[in-house]
Amino acid sequence: MEQQFNASLSYEAYEQKGYLNEDFRFFHIKSSESADIPYHYHDFHKLILVLSGDAKYMIEGLEYELKPFDFVLVNRHCIHRPVWNQEKTDSEYDRMILYLKDEFLLKYDLLDSFKAATEKKSSVVRFSGSISSKLYDAFKKIESDINSQDQIYKGSLRLRIDLLNALISFNEACITEANCFDTSARYNRKVIEIIDYISDNLSGDLAIDRLADHFYMSKYHMMRLFKNETGYSIHRYISEKRILLARDYIGAGMPATSACLECGFRDYSSFSRAFKNQLGILPSDIKF
Image 1 (tube, one colour):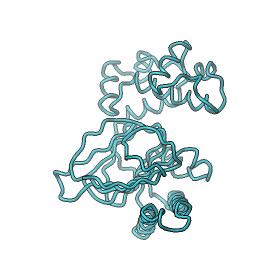
Image 2: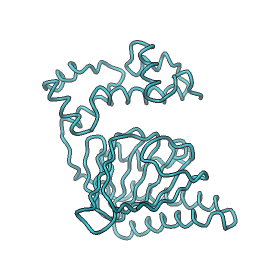
Image 3: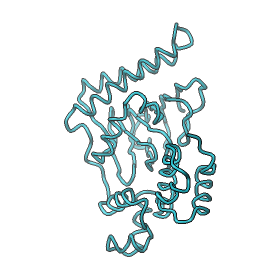
Image 4: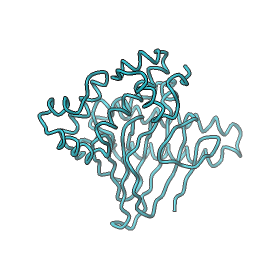
């Protein structure tokens, strides 16, 4: 059984993956059974407050064992997968989730926590009891606002104000509290090195043979290891990262042909076909 609240005006159902048309959505979800959710990515940022349950999160080759009152930051376009096993515990996997549109966070300059997660290579934050309690109360206030926004004066505006206050407090805590980012994630060092190399060289030659030579590995071992740790083949991972980057470039005003070359594609027809297959639209359909 899942209990859920949605902060968007359309009150659409919670989804594990996809796009976000509103500035934000809020969900409070309690899962009493285990689930097998595949690796995926979002076009938006995700902030999760874990309340209870035996759960872990895999994000871009890193595996985190979660504790109550951990905050999980999932940057847009990051490959991730949650796992929980309710057979090991009597408690439900209980969490509050915020979907946050990139443009919304940019508008209010509230991307500091997500930037810090990238810089520190950690997606889980743990605060002291007093800070966690304050932020939990802020999340509960958002939930309360959602339940009452249609009954009180300027309910939607109150919701937005309380959401912004919660995000300000969270971002402030992330940049002022020393050692709040968890560094105990399990990972394979070689896979993380490959991911970092791919991210830094999306415009270059990322052929499998070249990667294997660079990392002094058998290409078959490298491909098998990468798939086991990330859930993605190296080829699919590279292609999807390149397409997402190209979409951002085009959305910012870069000609599609230039974005094609900047993101490592040498043939526009193959680029256009991959773009359509992944995003469901052609590069020329993007408006800016």
